[in-house]
Length: 484
Image 1 (cartoon, rainbow, N blue to C red):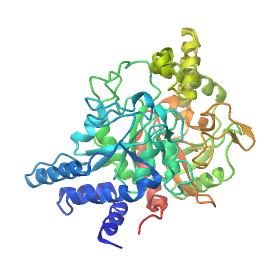
Image 2: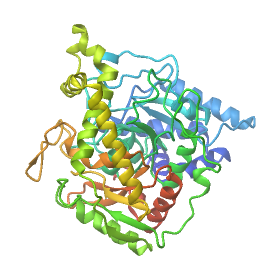
Image 3: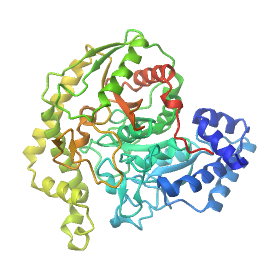
Image 4: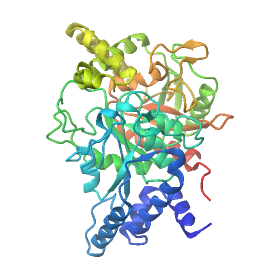
């Protein structure tokens, strides 16, 4: 290997927590880390298209030199000091183009960071650009007319998932140490499964988002962390989490950091396995086999796995979700639909969401929220008997990247652009923390994951369990064969 390739390989194999220690101890310079990161982006991004709107190299290296001078002067910003960071292209970044993957915002350059980005910068991150996302974050397949298709880290012919597809691919390929993402409908979990990395959807309010025009009623989406190790995930969550006055429903930071309490034992912990919910969810062949093998591994850790069929009609969750999503999306984008000058720039799925949202009555929205509340109460009763709930992370393996979305699963038609991801909805709707854990690969080499759902505000317990699973398996130590 060349010296650059050696640095790249080391960067890929070193988790972010160890990299942070090395930077703080000045065993490696911020310039060296940035140089290796940019070299990896230069080499791999033309194929995978994970990082977009990359800043000028000279400016990034100048920022890295500044970070090194700060360390030399005894000024340490925090766990992310000197980390190259590409931010999901749905999050506002001051002075850096934020397109949302939409022609409507192709030239949008925010004046200020959103809250999450500001926190990561304060912890020392150097924002180098953005990670690609589906147009306006809609759909779990990362492609858009501004930046194109992001391709799977394990096979560029396949989808990376979404909407945090660029984020997942960038860390799977070692383009950056950790990544931020967001999750409305599995957007941290699904691309995590498709990249063989971790994606954590936190509890509602754990990671505040803002500032934004509406802060009380639209509570479907949340920001969160992605990483290649549980301790990295916990460290990033500690930076992202905590109350802020601009987010009135945000939670206070925990008394002790999540990253400080990862040690634990899975013995006796009870896992309720919903699986395909008695056949309600169509699943591609092979997914349940991989998940069952992961459950057997959890049992070898001392956990108790039992089948679980909630006393709740899953179609009620879907109907409620569709109505609330229509309402939320139309609230954000109806003005662009009303304006003839911008309507033709909206993708068909967005038009469908807006038009159905405009047709909803206030009472229909209320009824959807009541159904969601019923599901939360049902979930609370389930957690009286189990510590965690488990389900497959996705209903299909990574599919052809040239498709818009899967139209069928095992002969069952998918009647909307997101029906094929319905299995992520239970956790999205009850507001509980949910993590994707890798479960391996099918015979074609396609990755898959299992989502483990914790009690409300139960991130600490969920992270401890994930750490036990990480230590009992080898999946997270595996990386795509692109080094050399």
